[in-house]
Amino acid sequence: MTQKKRIVVILGVGALLIGALALSLPEASSCAELSLWLILLYREIVGATTMQAVLKGLFSDDIADLEKYVPPEDDKFGFILRAMVGPMNGEGEESFDIGICTPKWLTEKHRTSEILLGLHKLIVFEYDYFRIRRFIEKYLMRCSGETWAETAQKVSLLGQWEFEGYQSRPPQN
Image 1 (cartoon, rainbow, N blue to C red):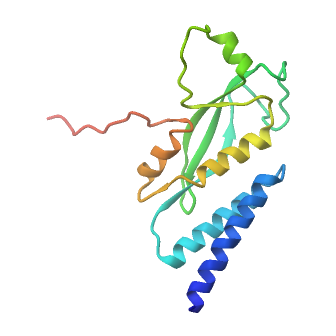
Image 2 (cartoon, helix red, strand yellow; image 1 turned 60 degrees about the vertical axis):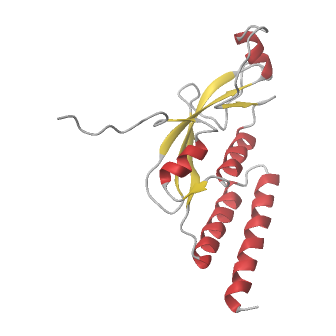
Image 3 (cartoon, rainbow, N blue to C red; image 1 turned 45 degrees about the vertical axis):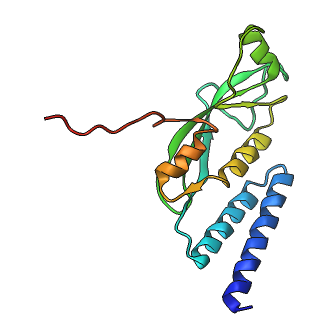
């Protein structure tokens, strides 16, 4: 095995182990970031040119401090979470709106005769900021593509992309 192949294997295994650790610890976003950087380094060594999505921030117009938020009812709440996502090795970010809600909140807001599509929703049984953040970071680890548009399209299954449905039109004469 060549030296380059050994380095690639070590980086790949390291990224997987750190990613697994990040998912098991309560506040391990730095582990998730380290895992993403190892993945990026691995891709550079093997010559991959894909763009990797990374979480750059979480916000809500409804909640001032997401980390300290305590819903009025533990098992019945809903709000819009804005995930700011961009390319790992590049500047910029775009917004993806995710509906965070509980099953009881859904039941209260919709009739039982309705059929709902879960697109752009995360259904949780209790509010735990760090678990929600880790879920989003883990999801983003699977979102990569040759271009940012291709990568963002994959992210848009999680949250409504600010450019979802946008089609550029040629200038009219």
